Amino acid sequence: MPKIPHRLYLTEEQMPSQWYNLRADMPEQPDPMLDPGTLQPLTEEALYPIFCKELARQEMDSQTRWVDIPEGILEEYRIYRPSPLIRAYNLEQTLDTPAKIYYKYEGNNTSGSHKLNSAIAQAYYAKQQGLKGVTTETGAGQWGTALSEACAFYGLDLQVYMVKCSYEQKPFRKAVMGVFDANVTPSPSPTTEIGRRILAEYPDSTGSLGCAISEAVEKAVSSENYRYVLGSVLNQVLLHQSIIGLEAKTAMDILGEYPDIVIGCAGGGSNLGGLIAPYMRDKLTGQGGPRIVAVEPASCPSFTRGKYAYDFCDTGKVTPLAKMYTLGNGFMPAPNHAGGLRYHGMSPILSKLYHDGYMEAVAVKQTEVFEAATLFATKETILPAPESSHAICQAIKEAVKCRESGEAKTILFGLTGTGYFDMMAYEAFKNGAMTDHVPTDEELAVGFASLPRLG
Ligand SMILES: *Cc1c(COP(=O)(O)O)cnc(C)c1O
Image 1: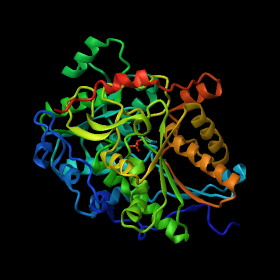
Image 2: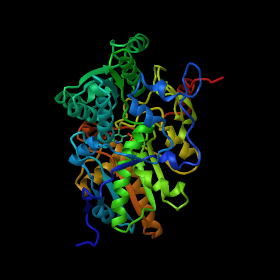
Image 3: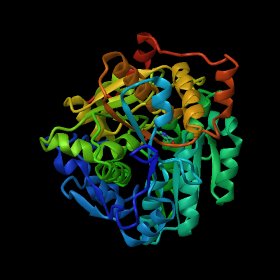
Image 4: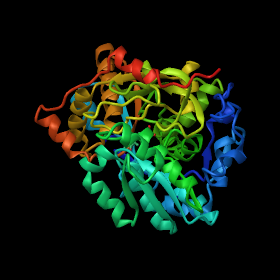
């Protein structure tokens, strides 16, 4: 029997009762969101037509370091949390590495991903405010699934705009959302002005997250007693996801472990921002801290090849402007890409931290990601989501480096979810039909041309 257990679950007493707000410890704040009309920083009140009040408040609050998690949310968290911290003994052995590999596994709930952590919080606050329902978009479908569950739990109506190619490729995702009575519309759709405009211009559009966001926002602001909710990118979502890192750090502390490297996949940045939160705090407060590595797809490389600039969060240009690493709101990721990390932008908090040198980023290719995913599934008995597998891929690379250098580093990565709805991608990989699309500089230039010019 190994000295350190394979899986460590915190007790209910050890579970965090507060979220941690990274901004409170940042020496420099991310640049503020701007009103696209006036180019002035947005006020909290200006967000009220879009977000429910408490979430608008959390979005703008850069001061409060620790935020109490309401009992009504903790009750739900306790049903599927804590999530386990797992030592990947089998993977270590297979790689013949002196490195110790830990992962925090967020796939142990019906929605199959970490997204439920923020979905519950957002649905709870919407219900508290007495709203009738919420609207949202979903790309690969995990957010829509998580939010469907949360809305069903708290008794809210839900309208989901689902990126059309996912809607067609993942019929079972839609079916799961149906179990929870969510209304799912493929995007772009004729149900909104923006959807109709995009369809008129690109009748064959398979959709994008940015386009689905435009539709969901339009639907929310034009329907009484509805607000819009978003599953990533926003400050409030990173706040809710800090539960991942706080649990992970408590568990690592119990084991007497401190990571040398923390790795997470980055789509809009929510799981990564959550996982790294307490470790980033150590860095920000001058207490050392690990190397922090964001992993993104080479087909949608916001950090590694994007620009740090103000951009719209959506294709229809209806949202506020955020300063972030972005490929441009007009960037259309390759449709053959299997993972759900296809958003053009990145969390403004993580963008600022990356810009200021507090973290690193790497881009990996789709086929190497699925190679890592299948090895991991074989050795660790979990079929990982393609998104999560980006982190696995990088963790394996770091562990192999340790084998070569003989250093026994401690690696922690985020395993954000399961891949049971991604079997077409796994099949394509196994059949040898999967390709790697890496956009050329010319292709990226098309996206950059869509960046708004400010003054
Ligand atoms: C949505 C999703 C991601 C990417 O989103 P982030 O906001 O960057 O965390 C990663 N993994 C899974 C399983 C997801 O569902």
